[in-house]
Length: 254
Image 1 (spheres, rainbow, N blue to C red):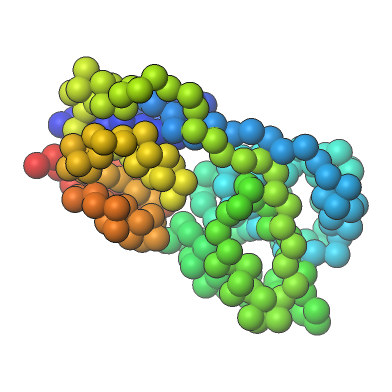
Image 2 (cartoon, rainbow, N blue to C red):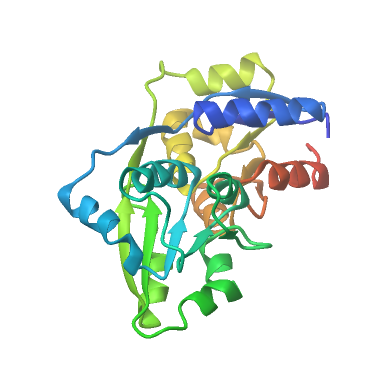
């Protein structure tokens, strides 16, 4: 495992936590956050959603920022979340944030993505009521697959969009200069948007960057990377530190 020299691209606070976990395993990493989280101001429509929180049979957080910012909104309007409600998280790390708040949370056990959550029996049970409503906590312009599938099942779905992800401002060639200076031999992205930012930041140097092993959290992001020309894509079956460590252990640099 120690042969890996990994570029981390998550938001800065998440890079720091993962770098520490990797260092404990003797894995070298460097951080170049390609996502920055910008909280969105609350709209009157969103305030209404929170005041009506008790009408949702299930609340789903699709990311760690969605969980953190969503709980801040809950705190603003509710002494405690409605007791009849079931909470879900797409990934284990997101679930941990909700559990720290005191919620009982269900997460996919194997595939940490929307498809894994849709197959969870607890979600099926939570929605087995007349006229079920679901609230999805997410960032601006997230994936539609989860809501679309639920709607085909007769579920009414609302979004609470809490933040946007932006590419931090870096000097030209910052990506390739970091890879070269620190002799990095792999890159990790945590979402489709972080891959899009990686591809954009590489610019004319993408043919070089595309040769590096790329660790991704899901089959969807893997397909996005392959279509763009990434030559060795490794799917981690989730974005958690444990999933990344498992993938690093199973694969070696060429």
